[in-house]
Length: 337
Image (cartoon, rainbow, N blue to C red):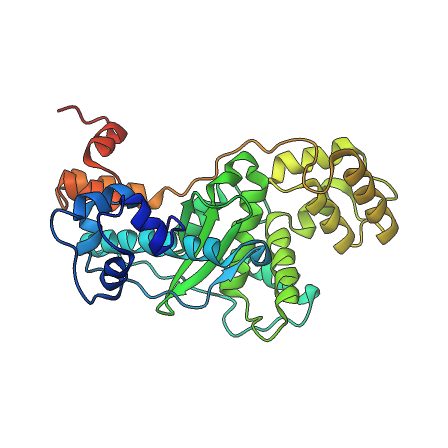
């Protein structure tokens, strides 16, 4: 989780133990003695409970966004941080006897192209009675549908990933750095939803990414809503119109333009002209305006505070589940002793 090699960890431990011994601990050949354990906890920033955890999870196939930008070490950091959080999350659910399953209304439906994906996005909205209005907290919406959404602090090149635990528990991970650009955070979690729900494994990887992008855009800004706002056909769009749509629907200006092109509202030429103008003025990553909203994963914390309030878990156990030291957890919940 810290991207350390065995040699690096031995160095952080000031060579109180050898690299060879650390390898044996890692492989389960032998255990560290009681004197070393506090130093391990300090270096690895985990509570002692971490090493005695019995609740483990097996992750299925993992889908990364921008996989090519992440080194092998950074990928492992993301995966192990996900595994750590999930083990605590699912143990908490088990302690409370909470069981939530995702109903996938798109099960068994294989999209052939972007047009099919557009239809499936509309079908999903209809199946969950989501209408055509802008989404509020997308993450809260997905949690309500039975998806475990984890917000983790990871490398800046990491956007998000998704996986299934034992083929039945859907998980989406999103980088907390995207709190700085909530429209990207919203798009990322819905892109990952596409990986979870769409049967697109037969497509090449780049095409899968393209289809999931289209799925996310169609969910955030349905064609019917877009046409209602700007009409069925336009020769030009004003920057102010694009910003209004961004702020209302929580979607990037570039995605709005792409949606307008897909819906046949603007031509390919008009789309390219706008995109070139945006890149010249703001570069490839930035754009005008911000989306002001709330995008947070709250379910884990609601469950944790409930378990603590109902004395299902002790304060120290709650802190361990939160991945915090007891004093830090007490500060978090304002418990004064």
